[in-house]
Length: 85
Image (cartoon, rainbow, N blue to C red):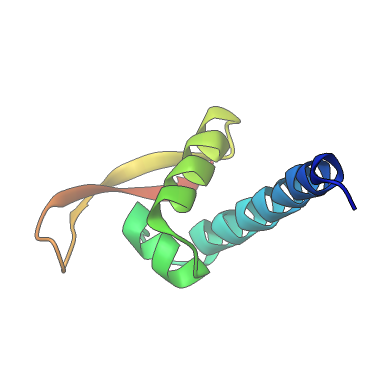
């Protein structure tokens, strides 16, 4: 197996991971009550940065939207929460 072959294989496996995470994030938004990005990352079991990227894509695709704001119980900051459109 060459380095090039490994790189191509890794590239394609990232697509599957992204798709899986996208489905997890969408399902989490669907099931959770007023989930923030932090809530979604925790509930889906993915990194916060990954959750943010997936939320941005789902929002851009018109599947979810920021529906309101709430105070995060951990950070005490005002955050957006998401819902299915």
